[in-house]
Image (tube, rainbow, N blue to C red; front, top):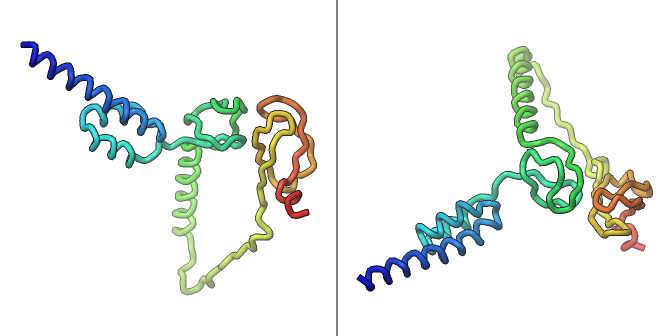
Length: 172
């Protein structure tokens, strides 16, 4: 009877250790629960599956660029207030765009009568974004290049900081 209990205990301990390894692999992709169960039930094969799982869709904080849960209003990494569109808003905009395209296609003139329209925008005309660090807390702040020289409030520490282009300083 002791042999059965020993084998069962070894099996359970092995499954827990394997599950913890799967948990560690899965947590890098925000899938710690899936990684634990795959590791505990399938062992090394589960680890491989956990490593190949796609990362959960998350939105990115515009200040620290780390993933935050969908629907969050504050970044759990840097504490800044999040703005911008969510995945659901992007999906709604995409559906609206498809509906407009379908409606326009129904009213369109036959293709033989339409000349092709090609719009090319040079890279120089696209708005460029750069990142600089807050002079007080060193958190990264991303801003359009046209905002260089403006004084803003840091989203992390709340201190006033001047936006600068670090690439311009390197070129000097």
